[in-house]
Amino acid sequence: MSAYTVSHEVGGFRVVPVKFSEKSSAGHMLYYKEHSVKESEDTKPTDRTLFVVNVPPYCNEECLQRLFGGCGGMESVILQAKAGKELDAMLEEIYPIRKTRGFKIAYIVFKDDSSVVRAMKQKYKEPFILSPEGEPGGLVTGYRKWCSEYEARWEDPKQLQKKADDFMIEFDKRKHEEKEQAKVEEGVPDDDGWVTVTRKSTKPVVARSERKQKRLQAKEKKKREEKELMNFYTFQSRESKREHIAELRMKFEEDKQRITQMRAARKFKPY
Image 1: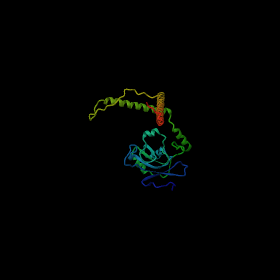
Image 2: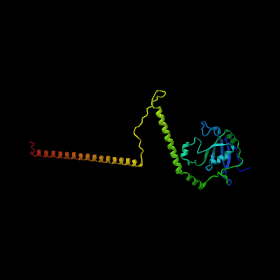
Image 3: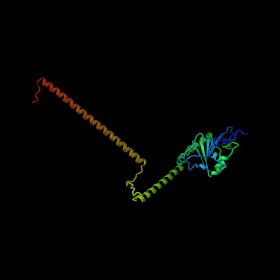
Image 4: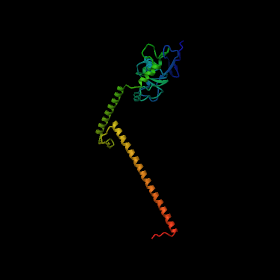
């Protein structure tokens, strides 16, 4: 009996033993079953999808394609950190190196539902080799894997520029279509008799270049300085008035005391 002989089914999951390579002494178990959820996704139709758990970090899409390829044609292999909806396709395109770390789950989407039936009848007597020696599709690990991931982080400038240009072309096209549609609908009442009025600015929109941006920043800085200086002058003027009033009050008090003294000496003659 092989050291990898295991039960073909555990808790409703089919069991498939795997090894990293022929030389590996340790094995690993993958568990899979038919994908079944209340709300089906377009990318994971329940009648054509396998749900795989306990997928090790070094097992990638190519490994799973080879493992289940004998059951029928595949539409896609989706790896995720946990069960549920996958990331938005646009996010995956923007961040292509955002790989799932550690153990993960997988969705194997076949082209035909009969492939799922065949997969559920499969029996594995020997462990499946994930990284066969001397064959294409071998796994890259260790230092080479880190170098490969580091290089993949940097987008090629030409491809990046092409993506930006394509995006702007599509954006301008969409804006032009919206503008043309607005012209067609202008003044036309809807089903309820309402007419949508759009505000159009006659002033041209001036793009801010770096020089204009610096000029505006310098202008704002000058305004702030002038305001601070004006505030300082206002404060200085108030202080000067306050000191002048205090001085007048002091002289008034001195005059009062002098008059009182003169009255006491009977020398005060107002007329």
